[in-house]
Length: 133
Image (cartoon, rainbow, N blue to C red):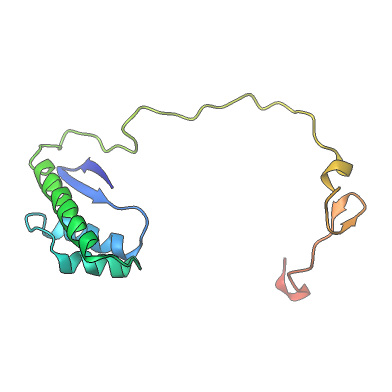
């Protein structure tokens, strides 16, 4: 889960699990003052196609309630002057010099090819003539 301040509100995003993530996201934005209950945890688990034991449901109920409490606490902060972040650290890509290097050559590259046509891999045709490709 990540939190990011944006226009005075804290939004919580959940990666992965599709519908379950959307359900949790809407839950956080809609009712942050309400504790999450076991029925909601079971619903999220079902949407995520997870089989949880009763002990896990109880544990996750407490953990998710703590997350909602934390998000509610963060919403008390004034974030109107805070710029939204993509990452918490000032990172950038490190680029190397683009230099030509030694290649394998056709013989080494095609040594394990199941079929070849001269210096090329031979592959099955996957598009018909009417495809326009």
